[in-house]
Image 1 (cartoon, rainbow, N blue to C red):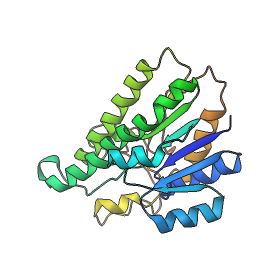
Image 2 (cartoon, rainbow, N blue to C red; image 1 turned 135 degrees about the vertical axis):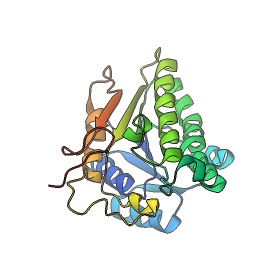
Image 3 (tube, one colour; image 1 turned 45 degrees about the vertical axis):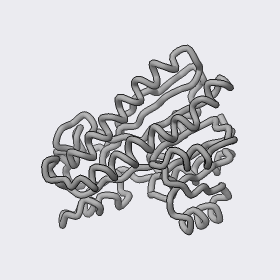
Image 4 (spheres, helix red, strand yellow; image 1 turned 90 degrees about the vertical axis):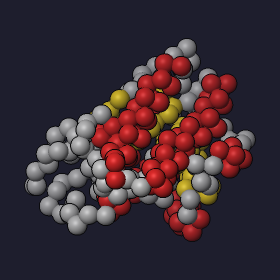
Length: 237
């Protein structure tokens, strides 16, 4: 399928790869992010259109996406935050995680899904994490927001069951994007490990979108071959 695709978190590692892939496949890509300069660079490289907006701001999202008709939504925007126990995570860190990872998700869906339902056409891909259902696989507060995403995906799929709108969720293991630097740890999360690459995620999304309209790849767990579920064991190559 082709048409208009909205990609959130477009200036991140995965978002960049997804934007590049979809643009090369003939989609009109609307790249959504918070960094205007990075969006301008993305648009110059891939010929997409950029929208700078804080997805945690409901009114701003509604205004930014008003009038857009999306055939595809790839929601990859999110923050990881520091690696702290739940009971030691500062209130401002938790507020930030909820604002971006959860409230932002609701804001984007509220702006995009009604149009898909009205046109009886659309595919939604949410980028989640295996830490949403595996304790200890990530910082507790972040993991809670990814568990919430899993619930949102399941309930959205249930609510849209009488429409042809598809809802897919990719639960990712370790991807080499640099986001793990937010953990503020000395550990090297990439050196010596054969991680998933952003281009691998983009290829999987392309496959999901290319399946027949009646096929919904609802949940995909995508991990490096040497990483067991949850990431608690990951051997070096």
